[in-house]
Length: 375
Image (tube, rainbow, N blue to C red; front, side, top):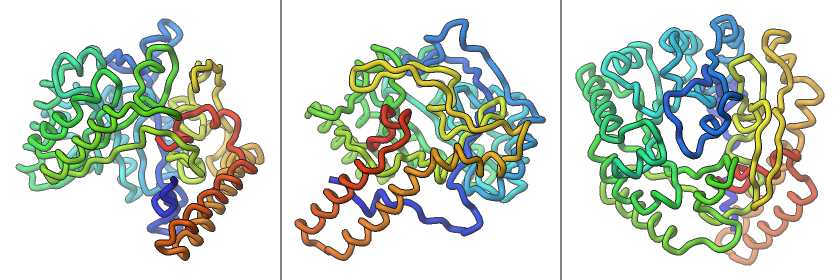
């Protein structure tokens, strides 16, 4: 059953900040070949690009209207030669800025630069609690080296008496490593990191990623549930935050990357609803069936202002189902709260929400995206 109150996340700290986050793909280049990423499987069709300073500078108008800028797309942000300047430019708008990294390039010099430029958040990805498991998934990286790099960053923060960047460790779950999640929680706690998230392989693009995912619409492996519960116990033991996603999928009113509150700008300056719809052309597997999904873009920042693109009829039409479903959710949250602890009324509220969602389906490419089903 939906936790309606948890799903309703349309609160904003400042009315003038329309977006929760603007995601900016500053590069498509990466120094690894992770098994769940489409990059290694595209061969020569995938080329390395870096967002130009001219393109990035055109995005300045957006920064005051978002709570957070996430410098992330399909590449490794630490490879961009002007990353420090990019962070500094975002900070001029008093906007929070962060990115996700594979952690391999996080040297002491880089750590110092990130602190100097005022980076707010840093998410570091791992894929196991042992060198062998991690290396078999995030090919080209060493878990030992990543942990060493995190310790260097933590030491720099201690010496400079600063708390930023706030560090989160992201653990990508697969059938090959879910059993190591409880052990990984303890290792992350030993690094002095107090925040961790266990994420799913949510971009399923070939048979391997389809086989490796641990979630399902139908039967959930009880061993997987047990591993997650043991990891939660470890997190409580070590007093760190561990966020997890459901193993059993169910259609959500709005995905976590709700296009009403999130937007992605790719390295060329194309305005897209999210990372998953920003690829020029991508194969996607959903419930065992293969689909070809074209890029969904509503304009380019070099040709029009962001405001002009945002107000385009086509973009508004794309967002309309999310707006309707958000309003439905808001209404049902109210009914759920009024029902108090009455399970019958709560169940009725959920059934009504499902019926209304069926009448207001998501845009076609979103219906075959696992993010729309609670992960």
